[in-house]
Image (cartoon, rainbow, N blue to C red; front, side, top):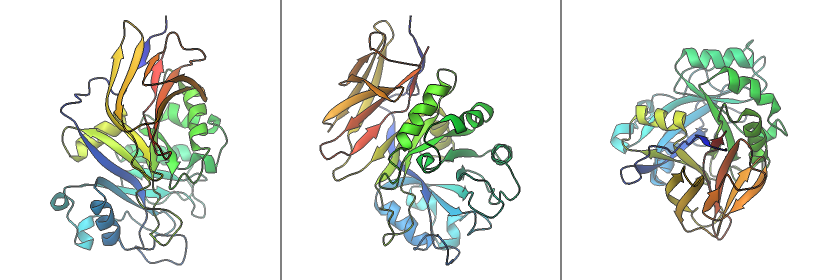
Length: 315
């Protein structure tokens, strides 16, 4: 009999948590560079995301532009506590001469140079620094998830992949994610992230179009880390109107049913193995055809704006 092996939302007190908007991939013009970097200074980027309602933000300078993280914010006269925000230290690794061949978001750590290192060595270094890691825009590099499997199996602090980058710049990101999930399940999850990859309002990377919604009882760095590690968040992609809002996710183990309580959606799809295996806010996963080692829900609004859950692992 099919059972729910991992529910990332198990134990969430839906009446107690607050929903905090978060971005983990944003570039600034610090330090000034003629290469591929951000167009706006850190204080402007922080202010813009604060004004948009974000309470968690990572400024992730490119490895080939920075020697250290864009940190602390007080260097630009911005105090995260006074703003009611959690500032996440981070760098987008990769792309430098002699560095790793796939970009990697290194969060909560100060690693800023991968010269001469393999991807495994970089991930080990991130872990040694008590950091967390995410592979951005996987569809830019690989059509399927095979390349990623060994890294997820070897590094528990590797959390997931971007499934929406900027204004869905690489539409196959979610296909790569599905293939990766199919290869990993039911032993390992890979969480899905959505990030602006922001480079400035005058660049081809729109502001506040791809974001994450964290379920937190307290706005602290520790709570943010716990939500990210446990998958207690949703990804969102904004087209025109605001994406659907998830109020709660319920699981009935006796009936083998997952149910999404939500607002402002046109339809709900359940995906597994890269295919749609169910429609509507409820899924009887034992009865659905073609369900593999995981399922995930995708809620779509009137103009195509999207909210997605993390995967539920089945065994």
